View 1 (cartoon, rainbow, N blue to C red):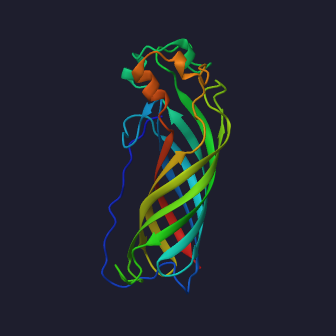
View 2 (view 1 turned 30 degrees about the vertical axis):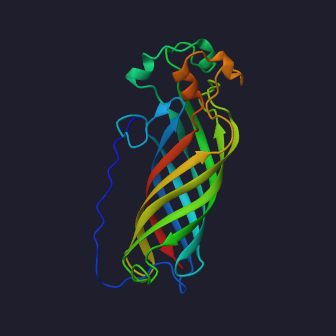
View 3 (view 1 turned 180 degrees about the vertical axis):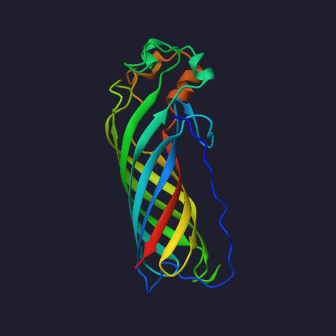
Length: 235
């Protein structure tokens, strides 16, 4: 599934606004995102003409103080990697391919459905130290952790189905339309902390890999990236 991402330009206003604050302590956001993969199969980060899978997200945020919020979020969407032309010409041993991709020359492909829950701490730059707390434009960064359930919806046995823990982080930009409503852009990156996401015929014995480049690729950690747009309400 190939898509182009269009990130809208947000207008910067100098008049005062109202975001999630000590009066409106809670906020709910809903949105959509496109998801990318980076791991031993390849890299589609910021390569919007390659593999892009869509998904949806929802977040509940709680005001902690003028610098920090605590957010609980859920996402659901497709996750994986489709071969590029160069990947198709990469010849690897059958042991490195997934059981369902033996007909492909390269390592194969990864397609799954990922449902995730996460908790993050968000640092807001509109905190009266760097920007006005009631600024219309509110940039932020965040850090947290999540649990991600992978389901082999293609039934090709190319994904290690089940639950995987991730370390998550990213940045975003929120525009406060008024005291209740906002729109935003969010960039999130997750690093899988456990075993491989991609399932191959290869055992855990790295001595079976004779090629140094293949060994280096096999040991790469798995990541995902989400570029998302959202709409929120504070209460």
